[in-house]
Length: 309
Length: 323
Image (cartoon, rainbow over the protein chains, first blue to last red):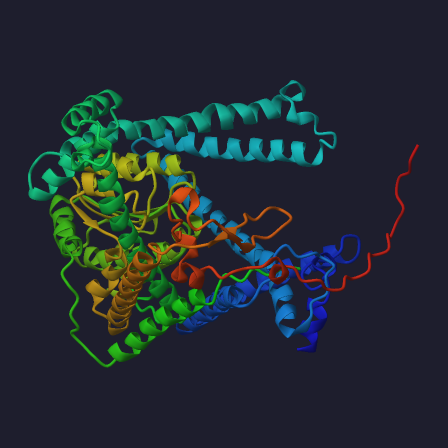
């Protein structure tokens, strides 16, 4: 407890437990951490199969416990880095607040390692396709070349902008070199445009899906089609205006008349506010409860489904 | 130093739900053959795999484009059951991932399923693939695979966004039987429009309980149902209290100031003319008893706490210099 108190009393930027100051033995700590990580991973590969589950559960439980405690414990917000915590509750809050970015860092490192695994799988599959000259192998060549070129150009551009540009000259296009132009061409000129092209295809897919869904085959499809037509018509200004004029004629422009409820905007508003939104909220309650139950089962190691067949 | 007290009921309510789930898991442990209602989308899994087997085409599974979380783990749980049946019939499978962490877990899960079924020789390492972390690159990759391999059955379960319709319509174009489900309520209508069977809302989470009939999972499902009853009861209470209170005339109204970069949100009561312009000033939502329970009154004094500061550190080096 004394250790926790001492650590919590240090402001985050001077807290040696979570952040080493530059210029001292930081490099030694970096290599030490990498070394411990590699040894840890090697040891994990040697672990017998039956021990795998308890180890995974232990890590899962500890990670989950951190966030559960973080959620329940009173946390400082908008805290001055040099403030000294008063009492055990605040000490715990300060300590966990400082620890949160480091826990997120661990998750980031893990994500990086897993991304390497994903890239390895992608490279393996497509290299094999090229070597064996399988059907459409040329597309695999395009993928591999694009991946390598994008990684090289992307990192080169990043290094130039982050480390070799103290006066931020590269923020303006007139100071760009070949690499910066290449990155711009590949990212903004190609990837973004191709993303946009894929996204725009959704418009056509919506049309074909709507055509099939709105065919009157059942009572449900009829109700769906009727409400969709009603909502679409209510958004057409000219139709909505003509209809409301007609209603005005019936009601004699009396705002308290019951027939005002037949205005298209009133009906569509009622459908959205009293049918659609409550249904969506009910679904979201169910999804939220399901996620809570699932999270609990994973955290407490109660899940015995497919992931742990 | 400032604290923002957002009320105790949130925590209490969460703990109550946790208690319901854990209590029912414990209660269900000794029981067998508990009832779970029929879910058509899950009943169709065997038909879909049977069709793929007859046609000699692969079964495609996509666990969404989300990160490794409860949703993707649940999707993989369902895919493990699908793979179990596919392994028995020797039907080829394809599982496409957009997230590297999901890919790693999926690879292990699918390999374990084949091993548990005694069919490890049928396991193809490349059947589980990482495509891309970019949303539309992933959409393009999966759509291409559906076209090239003419998948006979497709399972889209997990977190989907704009790409959901691209998948569903592409699979429809090749005549695949489609079973889909998303926790994103905005995407569910797209799946309903384009797919043969859809798991709606929490049916997605009930799937593994339905497929395995594991007492722990069914117990958890019953716990969720209890929690739903509490939610319904609270909605009813809110309906009653709001209906009563919002017809009362008030002479004070609550004002919640917005939080800014410097000042935390705080609340205050300001007087109002109860019969302004000759009309009654009725209580608003923020003035009701139930609202106050979940949004406690926060004063300026409550959110501002003064405490001693550490002394400024001495500058270690003097670098550079002025002109």
